[in-house]
Length: 225
Image (cartoon, rainbow, N blue to C red):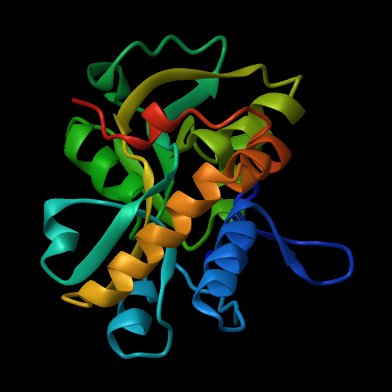
């Protein structure tokens, strides 16, 4: 999992990893009768780590046809959408308004590919190795805007009162999935069963209320039409 992706995952004051993804991974491990081992990854190495068998599952993966050619996907376990965020004073209503603007994004992620597809040629996309660097670039004025997931963006919206940031528009809605190696059918079925059990017993909702600060809506685990 990403080590700096709150509220999905982050390092606490006692140096342990906490967050929504940690609770879900722990619940799946418990259902499988194994001990969870959390491995930090980034947007550039995580699929290679999975296919090289250095890890067995990836958390917080957006499902796409391109990725489905090389990895397998279990059902979605968390709502997720990608938004362009900018200062309130900057008028941005859609992709065309990105012309001439600079936008920070985490390299190698679904945010990156979505932004690259939507942005006009005159936009400057600045790619960074992690979310902390993306946020820092935006709040210090190195870029005009940033493109991040709704939960990463929520940190900035809540804490940067002077900047008055706001969501401008959504690039796409893509619920978060757990990825495994391609064609590992038994693993996919086991993960799906574990997540469904967490939905049924309320533990996934509890994780959502704790970390995402909202009750879980199962309909938000379905991709946009």
